[in-house]
Length: 70
Length: 207
Image (cartoon, rainbow over all chains, first blue to last red; front, side, top):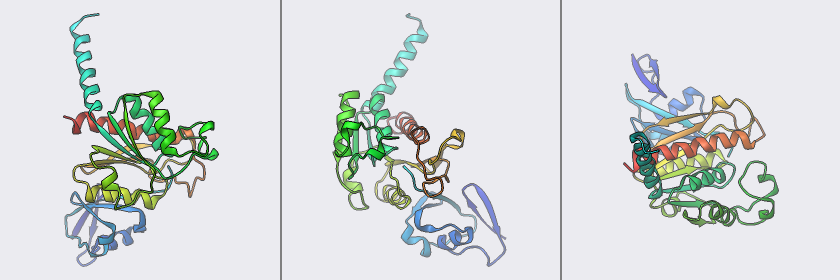
């Protein structure tokens, strides 16, 4: 069993089913990556690097989704 | 009164005033958020504000933004400087009439302790938050997401994300879904932002 902590919530995955990258994680959560800021274990990951940033068991991810208005 | 309590309260206030007075805050965008954040920080005595917006004041802005009827058609940066001087002439204000992007943000806001993200578009909000966190070591950013509509004041929250990012708003009510922006609800979010910035400056940055 693998887990990721996303915005404080634990997500469990069977072996082989964990999202492989941040882009995969956003896809699995149904989130459009265009207006998202992501931190992986406290480090900012730039949007352009979402598809190539690999996820590992036990990592903590913070996702901030922006909606328009100001 | 000259009780010890009053004296310690005075010293406490003096300490806060001093910390804010030597602080520099960037304000990216002078719409409903930025124009209100700027006023609150000027009244609070923040030493220097760096403000940026490429736009002019329009009639449709006046239902929520801190500008006046006789300022319609003028640059928001010029008008904000004029208004802030009338509120607190001690605050130093640097204005930039330009569209902010990944290249000029680190240069324009160099020296800031903290930056308020006060844009309208979601893509622009993402761009500046990512740019500050990726390119501006140790600068904190206070951003807003979810402030459209009216009512539901208590759904607006201030949330800390990691060491350098604070997000204010309800996270979902957007101008796509709610269509309206009201002075009251945008104002609540702007004051959350200003309050979070003051807290960061006093408790974490100017220790």
